[in-house]
Amino acid sequence: MELRWLEDFIVLAETRHFSRAADLQNVTQPTFSRRIKLLEESMGTTLINRQTLPLSLTPAGEEFLILCKQVTERVRLTRERLQNLAQENTQRVRLAAPQSLMTYFVPGWLAAHGWQQQVEPYLRATSWLIEDYFQGLERGEVDLALCYWPESRTTLELDMSGLRYVLIGEERLIPVSAVDDAGKARFALPGQKRQPLPHIAYHPSGLIAATLQAHWARSRQEVHLTTLNENVQTSNIRELVQQGYGLGWLPWRTVRQALERGELTRAGDQRWDVPLSLRLYFRQDSRHPSLHGLLAQLQERSHAPTR
Image (tube, rainbow, N blue to C red):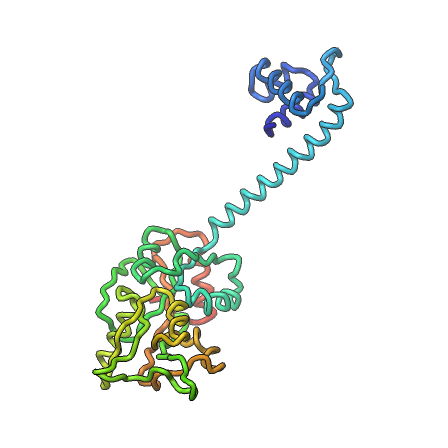
């Protein structure tokens, strides 16, 4: 049974005339009559009394007419609601961010600004590398890209033409390790040349890996590491570190509670910490109807300049 058959029946019940009903439904009379016949066959009973002029409904037809009106009205309302939802979704600002920020920063940040309904976290981006975020902005896949950013220069070259950003927070990478039986770090920096420390590392093409390399190059003390594993997502690094496979540098927000509970401990003092900022990137020429209004609110509330 098709929805248009129900609509045909309602029109026929209103006009009581096959020819006029067919015209209103923009079909030929034979086609219209055939659809009414198929409807009756589907219901297993006669719905139209064709012996009267004008046509009349059988008792079953009168009962069925009530159902037809209820169903078609419900479908109409549902269709309108779905169209409104689709329109609302197209108006929402899509935000890309690494998994760690999406988990430990974005929910509270959106709630603080009351933007839960206006900003849609784009979960496909949680495993992107830094270049993917900028390319996502370029092709319009996302409207905002929230990224960790080093305070010092790195060797990683990125094309950021046409992009601007707002500073919205700070973070720092800290070296952490699982604890031994005495409650001390199982792996402690800086390690030894003959016995390098096992390192659970970030993807070598990512910004965090480049940031750590630059930080170690500037350090007065040499670090001795051997990479056991490389990951894009912070959660994977944290899991391997917590299981005691090696040490790793993790955002403070992601390990704060584990440090407080004694599940992890620092693998080195603050000399090994790497300061980061949180940059919210966007395309200056974006035509999203809501984006620039949100950015204006952000700058007004936080007094953070656009750069």
